[in-house]
Image (cartoon, rainbow, N blue to C red; front, side):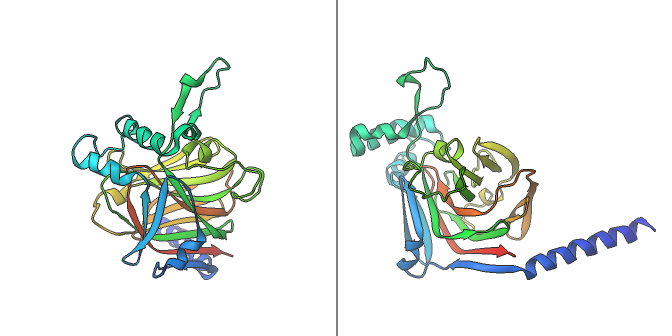
Length: 284
C-alpha cells in the first residue's frame, strides 16, 4: 500500500468525521443585537457597560473615556501598560468608591508575614457573561469582532463552572468585581482566549484555576484594526480550536479537559470593541 493511498484514506476519514460532527451541530442561541431586549441575557461583573449601537453589541470599560483622553493627548501610551494608566484609574475609582475601593486590591503573596503593602490593584476590567444559555461539553461559539480603539486587550471566556460543580452565579460564591484573580485563582473552572494584543502579537489560551498557559497562537485580529473578523471557538471533547475568518489559528488537546458551562467576554480598562452575530452551537 503506497503512501499516497494511505494519505487519501486518512484524509477521507478526517472529512467523514468532520461531516459527522457538523451533522450533529445544534444551534443553542443567536444574537443579532437588533433590540435592547437581547441585553437581558447578559450579566456584567466589574467596571464595564454594554449597549447596542448600529446593530452591534458595544463593550466599554466604565473609565475608558477618561483613559482615552489621556491616550489621545499622549499622557499615557496605547500599549495597555498598567504602570501608566493605573494611577489615573485608582484616583478615579477612589473618588467613586471611597474606602470600598479596597475590594479591588488583592494580596497574591503566600508569605505569612505579608501585609497590606503587598496588596496589588486589579480594578478597571470587567467580564460580561451570558447567563441564559450554557454549553454542553462539545460546542462552538462564533462571533464577529471589531476593535473600536487600538488598545488591548479582549478575551473570550468559556467552559466556566464552579470548582464544586455549581453554576458561576451560585449564591455560595462571593460577589465578583471583574478581577482577573477571581477568574484565574479563585473558585471557578474556565478557559479563556485573549486576542487583539498588537504588542504581544499572540492569542493565548489559558486555563483556570491556576492561570495555566496552554498555547500561544497568532493574534491575527490585531493585524488590521479597521477590519471586522469572524471568530470561532470550538471545543470537541478534549480539543479546543481557535478559528478566524475560516483559518485555523491553533488546535490544542487538553488531557484533563473542562466540560461545558457558562461563556462570555472580558475586556481590560483601555479596550473598546464591537461584537455581533454571536451564535452558540452544541454538538450532540
